[in-house]
Length: 340
Ligand code: UDP
Ligand code: MG
Image (tube, rainbow, N blue to C red; front, side, top):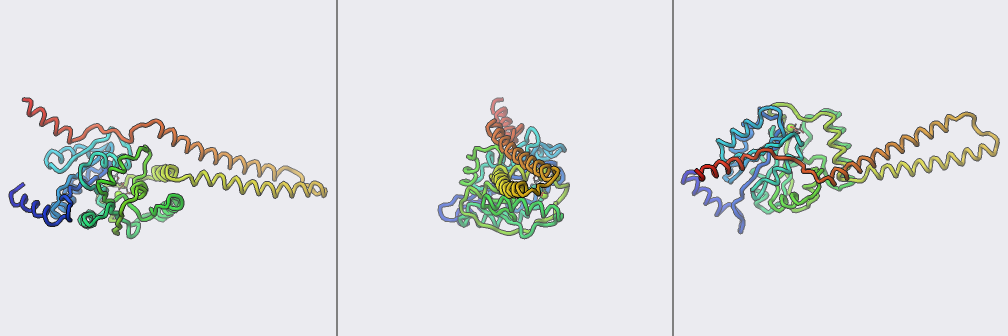
């Protein structure tokens, strides 16, 4: 760093941070899965914004087991740029795992989670930092609208969020993973013992002083969205079941309705039988047996799903496995250097 820049940092330390607050070092956590076209540009754009804002920062790329050369790019970048750090997963563990790995490894006094494709506008980061400086412990960026999504996707997302909201009282419809969190929040999240996580909901669940800012979802910078229908359904079911017992209650509810139905039908049949107008044939019987069987099966399926969740949690497997951390590599290099 030049002397001028040093002085500038000193100045900022003294005057722009609030009373009793240290100059904040910001960690930017960027999950990346097959994002070869985006890494360099994203690092440059976010780096420039933070440099201009005049804060210390680290860009923490988490390579979620990409199949292309994403890791090579991150690795090269981290060698040339001291503020870039990379974590490489041993395989694809999903974005949630990537975010939580980033939260555990980041060293900043606050951290911002942002997508690699710049769909979350990085120009908002200074505004988020400003709010943090004014005392906000979480700054959530909420979508002003949901961007360009197909009608089907919109409907799917709406239903999912409705169920989540009803049962966990967390408003998720416009929420995104684009968030700033204070060290306190990061530590609280790191203490969560569960394996199956839903970052968006958990980060609301922990509470803390939260500010919201709106943003417009930008179109993807390059490459393709990593979601497909199967992944999306899995994601929704996973999160609903790890946050609410609503589906289980639904089964009980259906059971009660069926019981009432069966009672009415039973009385009616008895009345008919005694009045001598009993129906011939078994149509009704078949129908009821079929319906009841399907209800039972759905119920068992849902219970089975929760049981499998318990099983997953009880295994205490890690949420992700890191195979390379560029920071360790650098430390190793310097170790070797000093030994020679
Ligand atoms: N991502 C990830 N692991 C995955 C899928 C996605 O780390 O298995 C990352 C991806 O690289 C991007 C972010 O999560 O930075 C959001 O993914 P994407 O843009 O595909 O989702 P969308 O914006 O369409 O919701
Ligand atoms: Mg995207």
